[in-house]
Amino acid sequence: MDREILNILSKNSRLSNKQIAVMVDKSEQYVTEKIKEMEEKNVLLGYPALIDIEKTEVDIVTAYIEVKVTPQRDRGFDEVSERIYQFPQVISCSLMSGGYDLFVTVEGKSMKDVALFVAEKLATVDSVISTSTHFVLKKYKENGVIFNKKHKDNREAVVL
Amino acid sequence: MNVKKMIAPHVEAVPFSGIRKYFDLIYDMKGAISLGIGEPDFVTPYNIREAGIYSLEKGYTHYSANAGFIELRQEICNYMQRRFDLSYGPEKEVIVTVGGSEAIDLAIRAIVSKGDEVIIPEPSFVAYKGCTLFSGAVPVPINLKAENEFRLTREELEKVVTEKTKLLILGYPNNPTGAIMEYEDYVEIVDFLKSKDIMIISDELYAELTYSGKNHVSIANFEEMKDRTIVVNGLSKAYAMTGWRIGYACGNKYIIEQMKKIHQYAIMCAPTTAQYAAIEALKNADDEVKEMTTEYNQRRRVVVDGFRKIGFDCFEPLGAFYVFPDIRKTGLSSDQFCEDLLKEEKVLVIPGGAFGECGEGFVRATYANSMENLIEAMNRIERFVQQFK
View 1 (cartoon, helix red, strand yellow):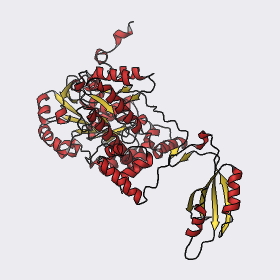
View 2: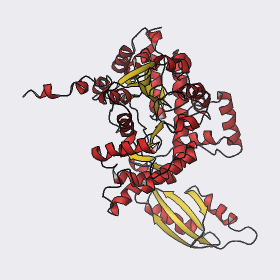
View 3: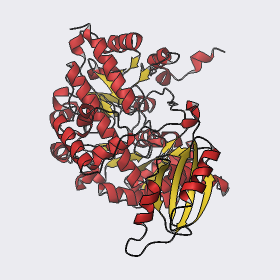
């Protein structure tokens, strides 16, 4: 594993291996091999772009859903999670501590679309006890990136 | 009355910095990339900003003690001990100032008077010379050499010391060259200085920004030098806090006391909101500093690599956030280079001559900028240089 390379990629995965090699003072071959190795070990899982959907005029509705389930003997929460996260509508799924068990992010074309998915697919999964759906109205920040932030250099020209 | 004639001659005689004209040129230019500014592009880490906001919410809006809040001075002492193995007492050996610049001015004014000679190794930060002249003293430059990576040597120092020499101003890690001084570099210099009555101001604003495992060494780390050295540091560069204006000086209590006197009459105290923010910074931002330093280091490598690929000689700068490539291969003066580069490719770098005569033939490029901008700027500079090949 190479933490510095991971760090660089987590901020900008569009840099070339050659550029990264200069940044970390290693050979291009080293960077290429390291990245490949981390991909093979499932440390690096993908390079998706972070998109502000609102600006794309594509209709996508996001909802965060709290799901309570009954864990199954010997398998805990893993099996029911698998049943849930395989739906393509499910963007993320995490096991939580606290008042509910699974935190599921669902995307759909409309609120109705999402609501129907929850009612027909999610709530009907065996061992799901209850669901609570929260629709996202506006995203301010995701993956450490603030939406609608102007990247303006407001440093004044000073002599020093 | 002709007001112009009323200006003190020794003030009027000091020229404005030559850099100004470039900032005027770039002001309205769309799509320009400035590698000209000597300050971090990072915004102050949020926990530090929040501490300033909180102090305002609480209504902490009064003066502090002239030398700064004792809690801040204590944190400064902890920091100096923790990071640089330098021990000072918060009561009498530290003063909080309005940026490192004020500390430099205070120290110069407290030490020299008319006719004293002040040795300034150049290229250097532009304020040393100006402040020396304002105090009536005589600046004596040393022309440092690129082949020594702009480090100071004993021979160079010995040559310029006279009976009038009272002060030596060191600025490492260096603006504009990015040079550093290591322990071994100081040994001979310390050996020479210990038999002389010469004070030292060591401007260490960039002390956090050293690379390739080279930890910062202060001349005050030498036992024989500590008492005669005023260490100037501040939060501007390391913590990305330039606009807050918090610097400080540490040193012998008699000198600090006199500096405090000038500060008391001229400034009163550093802004209190900024002092509260500074306490938070020194207590709880070591990780943020490390993160920024790592990123500067990555950018540094990209820019040094870029200049070398273009074909310029560029020694490896191991400190600060500047590179200082030799542009003489183009046949242009550094002034012409900067002006043409700005007009043709909209990239601003600063002519080395602005930092002392021996900087001629070099330019200063700041890599405190986003990686995207740096990559684009290097591409443009490469395109610009093609015409001279």
